Length: 392
Image (cartoon, rainbow, N blue to C red):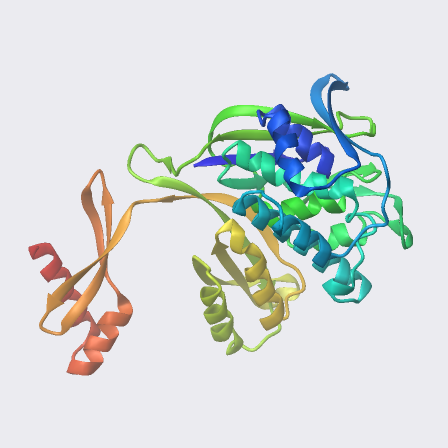
């Protein structure tokens, strides 16, 4: 599996994304040819090589001949879907714009159909977003991951006036994304860059295990006293083998301390988390300040499911904040097999190492149902199932 890791150590914007992907190997002429399928005119795309405080990077610039006044999501969606671009590029591009439109709509208290994209509906943003999706396809990228977002402060002038940084839409887009302290004054993460990450990234944190094949640097236009570039690292990560026996998988671990809800609520919390796709949910008794007994709620999930997990936690518990970390999980290959027993068919989860069975566990729900049906102890059903499996 080919992945791209966006190392946003100095932030991210639409043009930085284009520059980094071109620098990593996306063919610039093919990019322009594909963008031509949009039917958008009155702009010119240029590529230059620049040096940003010692780092050589690709600088992709969009020169607009006639500025427009923006347009709505429906118009942008129609333009993309009517183009001759691939289905993948169309789908990703529309999804990024939809994510951006929903953030703008929430900030301004409107629906997405009422939002007029003053900043992002212009030609340059359409080229940035659609161009980024084209480059990912040209590079054969299967999945995207990203680093934590760097913090920044200051103000920015937009169509509605002077706003604090991060811009409201940027902050909304990056909810649930881990941030790291940087403290730069100036807009180093733009709404367009945030939308690309929020929609396309499978997870945020350290770089996943990979065999690196290419590295690209995309230049920003401003100087913040550090190399203002976005780094994209591309490589192969199919399921990194663990000594030839299993694989590493990237997961997100979400945790929060809770000391003020009824224990009965934890049942529905766990049920909803598993229904939303959690890989595991568990609770640990802890003691907080002033000797208050509490529960540490821990959730393990795929990076792409992080938002759904935090939504459940905030909706069902009294928590107003969670901790999120990226980890690697080592997994042995496993299969589900069915054995016939005197109590009926029982499914068994079988884990193997070097092709040899190292663990065989009957499915609890199958054993529970069979035990109730035949009025026997659950452990008898379980042991019988294991015995039948070992016979085979």
